[in-house]
Length: 93
Image (cartoon, rainbow, N blue to C red; front, side):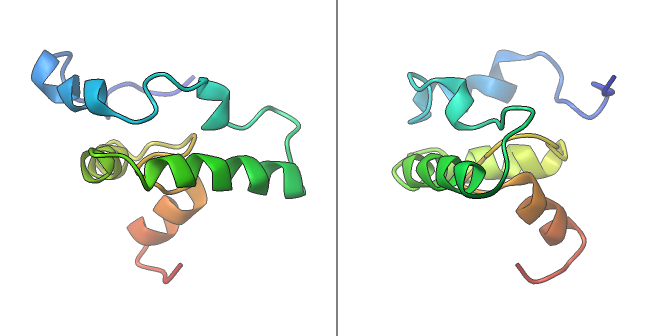
């Protein structure tokens, strides 16, 4: 089970930006992989999610949140978990 200590305090101001997200009316499955999802299917889903992120007015806040809490799952702020991990480690993506 993941630790929630990395998450911001449950204050409205910590999450308010999410109400302006382009994804707020999109099926969350577009941003998170299914257990057995691999290869082209996964790449295609990630590309669709990133395309929506590219239109989002709060993409920067979303990205900053994902980096701050070290979000291990899903597309956040136009990045995959693997891309965020590489950035955290200072590796070129």
